[in-house]
Length: 220
Image (cartoon, rainbow, N blue to C red; front, top):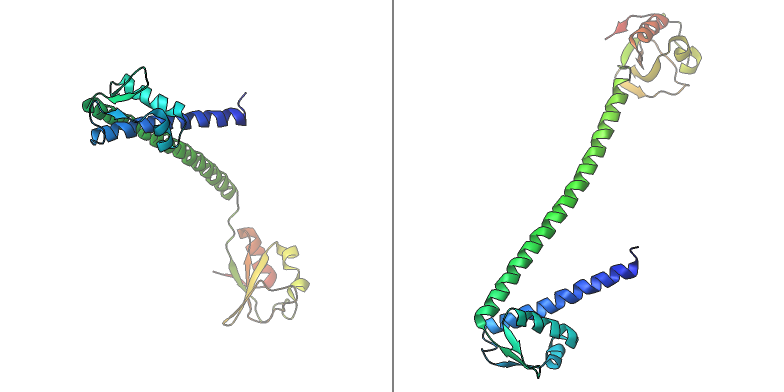
């Protein structure tokens, strides 16, 4: 089972590995730069540990890494001696290449994760669009139409509530055009006046019923 302590322990191990490699790289780079000459003795582990602010064990691992690559040698008395500037240079270049590859791997992983997230979002958006399109396909188109109220119409002087247009025709009143004025969403108490143009919505059958009820033809 993966626990928080296991995760923390794993992170600590990664940090420790990164630290001793970083120290080994720094020492190798200093050899390449000429700070340490071939056959020169490097400070003991305790001094190096104090210099890098790490434990002597971390320094020991760093020196062991350099020893394997024949950059330094370690005597029985644990003295560290520089063996080769060329090997130090090869060591630095090798790990630079390794870090570059690791960095590229990390970039690829980040891009792949972002791609998966984008693909998931795109899939959700496409699903929403399809669902919305299906809903629109099932809707009956309702176009607003103006019906003029003739002067002799029986609805003149009555309110929208009184003429009960929706009950008689199924049409919904969305506005009243009165000369140059437009009354948007007129309430039930709005009175109908001669030559008003009632703006209604509904299907073609409902609009025909409305024109007949009002007493005038549909004006397109």
